[in-house]
Amino acid sequence: MGFKKSFLRSFSNAMNDRADIASKSDNSHEGIKQTTLMRDEEQVQAIVTHLNQTVTDPFDIDVHPHCLINISTDMHATREVQDFLLSAVNAGENMCRKFVNSAVSIGQSGNFYRPTIKSKLKTFTQTNAKRTLKCKSGQTITGHINPEIVFRCALALANSRYDVTIDSIFLLPLGPIPVSLFHEDRTMRKSCKSDLVKQFENEVTSVLSFPEFDPSLTTYVRIDMSIVQCMHANKHKTFGNLAVDYFNYCFSKAHTVADVFDRYDVKYSIKPIERERRTHQRHCSCKCVSSDRRKTCSRLEEISFC
Image (cartoon, rainbow, N blue to C red; front, side, top):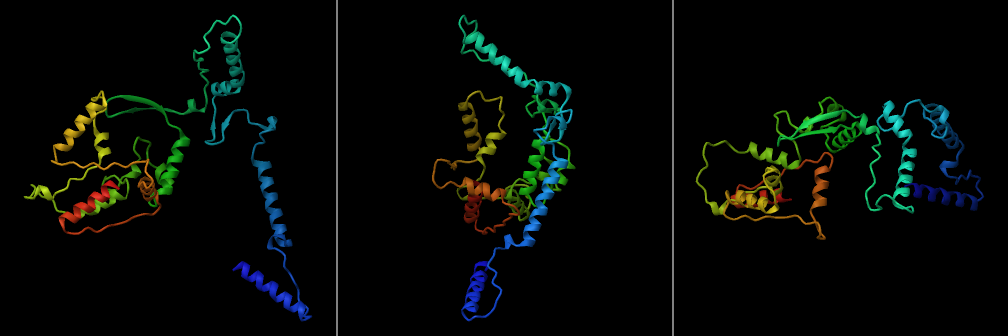
């Protein structure tokens, strides 16, 4: 549209000049007009003023604050961390000089291929509070909770889910599993598959015992990786033991098992499409299945293995 207007204006001005009709020809760009130049100059001056008044000049040491501050999290470093960071260059040079004198120089007293000793440098990571987490296997893990990583995870979660905001996430306590991933009825909200299964559950009725059915027309669909993740980690010493338990579990509920694996070395892989579908914002799909058992099982199998 802009090119069309410019072409028509140029054509009209040329016709007026050919007919000796006085007209104000203005073919200049919008960006070089006086009002636009004044507006741009004011915006540039506002940015320069903001940088000079609110941002610390990294090249002027006299105006730097007394304590070190992490510009990403606005966290103040402790005195111990500050001393370590300020002396990091000297400590690194001393370690390098010690290595050269002992392993490279004449009359060396150390081995050149021996790994160097860690500098034990303390950074902003040591300022994060330590939390003790207890695993399901009984092991206890002590780790640091990084505020920057927590904020990044919250931001990624808020951008990928339309019903979750950063404000609602920060109102919840920190834990290994975010509480915002659950519905009000305590069912976990993982992906569109979980919502689809919820719709299927609403269409069925609870029974005390299974009715009679033909096993040859029944398909039992399960996710391979979910079975592996539920197995006890300390029980299996080798991959062979894990495979034996996996096959025993699968054949305990079915006579025939067909595994479908997703490969990454093929040209047309479903993994990128699956990731895009799961992370797409405001994405929700509902599929209807036929009442026919065979068609239903085939559709469920397609959904489960996608």
